[in-house]
Length: 238
Image 1 (cartoon, rainbow, N blue to C red):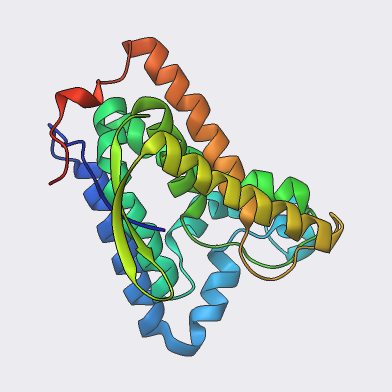
Image 2: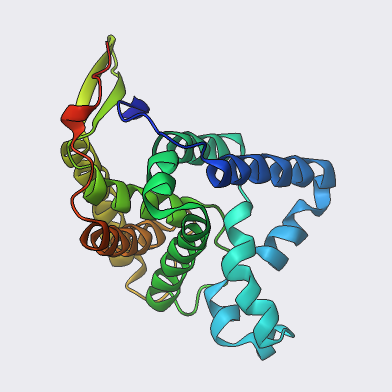
């Protein structure tokens, strides 16, 4: 399932969301320019659980390691990794920014990423594999969006084997399915690693931790500002 757009128009210009997308693209371009040195930057700026818990063993200070909770969010492993994250950010981020406000949305984006990274770290404390990408932050945005706009409809592309299809799915259907897939893959990866060492690949638990943090913030925002905008106020996609 590939979301293409939602049916909730924003009534503000999402400056922070646009800035985040632009920053991710610029950082990725810089990664490409560095060429063979890119791996060094990933190890330096990526979030590594073992390094986080034992910074001095890696020759780092506490502050250097803490910074990777933020720097790791802007580094990606390839075009597909970057493109997938930015697609979700473009579709869902503007509405969450409108609800939280510009400044709080930026803090929320960083906090979701940090929450995801810490969830991953506590489950794989011995891992020396750098975790990179904004997936934890994106997951948090999806969690908040689910709470704030549960009945919003998402135009979704289904690339099936024989043919393809488009459908409008309510957020309350699409996003829990997305979360269930993350949880299933996270549980399988944890079982394979027996909770000791991460299997190289996707940091599924960063997605799970970010999503749950986003849900919590979404509930706080909804309680503080009243009910989310009713989707019936907005036009449906043609």
